[in-house]
Structure formats: C-alpha cells, structure tokens
Image (tube, rainbow, N blue to C red):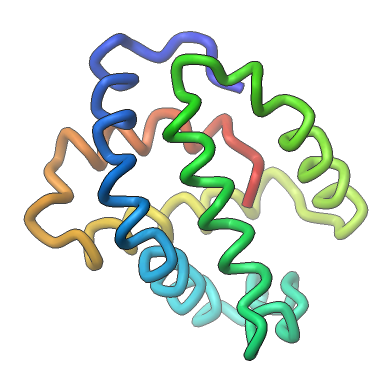
Length: 135
C-alpha cells in the first residue's frame, strides 16, 4: 500500500468520496467497458460476474469507495487487500496487467465525472493506483 502520499493527495482523494458514492458504479462500468476492448485483458475476467448480478462491478465499487474513505488509515484495508491479492495471484493476474486497469479507471473517472475530474483529481487518484492491487 502506498506510504508516501502527500497531504494534498490524501485531501483530494478524501474529497472524492461523495462523487464516488453517487457515481462509483457508473465509473466502474465505464472502466470495465474500456478494459474489455482489449481481448487479452477481457479474458482474465469471469464474464458471468459482470452480467445480471453485477457482482464484480459492485465489489470493485465498494473497494474503491473503501479506499477513498480510508485513505488516512490504509492499514484498515490490509485484510481485504490481502484476500484480493491472493485471489489475483490464483487467477494469474500479473503486475503488467495493472497499468491497463489504472489507465481505464482514470479515463472512466474523467468520462463519468466530466469537469469535476480536474487534473488535480486525476493526478491524486493516479498516484496510489500504481500501488493498489485490488482490481
């Protein structure tokens, strides 16, 4: 987990909590739509978890919101992050897959939040994503 986030980054990510509560699922759906354009990335996912039940998008939305809400106490997320990391290892998710997710998430935030996704917001979210293996 990131340990060197600036006070400014922490404040900006914290300030996005209301936007995530309102638009988080739309952001995640947009993120997956972007990622699934790449067959190599799409094939890493169980598509049944993206259907009617929306299980995976809802789980990721909750994880992103938990991250933002706990940005000042990331240790509280350690057990959940450990479970997710173990699952990803079992599914053969590799470090080189994460940049695809990060790019798709940042573009989805930009798309869904529009003008509210300022360069400061995108930069603040971009810093910790590189360390955050919960996708």
